[in-house]
Length: 159
Image 1 (cartoon, rainbow, N blue to C red):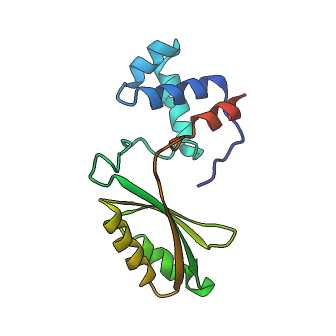
Image 2: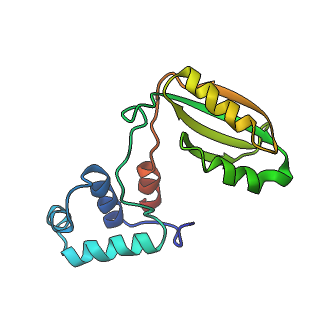
C-alpha cells in the first residue's frame, strides 16, 4: 500500500526512530522520552499506520539465526503471460524472502535464503520447474554492506 501523504514532520520521525531502536518499549515510555502526551504518540502512530507509512510492528527475523545463512539473488526470465501463476507459485516457497518484477534483462528478481550452497541450488532448481520460468541467473551474497533500511528515507521525508 502506498503512503497517502508526501512527508513526515520532526515528531513523526522521532517516534519512528524510537519504535525502530526500542521496539519493546511502550507508548508511555515513548511519550516520556519525547516530552509529549501518550495520546499524541498513539494518535501519530495510528495515523502513520492508516497512511501506510508503518507497515508492521513484528519482530525482525534473521535468516542466519533460523539456520539459513546463505543468501542469493536470483533473476528469473519468465513468459509474461504466466506472471500471475509464477507469482502464486513463488509465494509458496518458504526460502523465498522477497520477489519483485523488474526492468532489465530479467523479469522477476528474487532474494532467497538457504542452509548451504546445495540447498540454494535445490531452491533454484525448484523455481526452474515452475511453468513459465525460462531460465535463471543467480549470485550468492558474500557479506552485507548495507542492511535493509528505511529510516534514512523517513528522515529525508521529514526534512
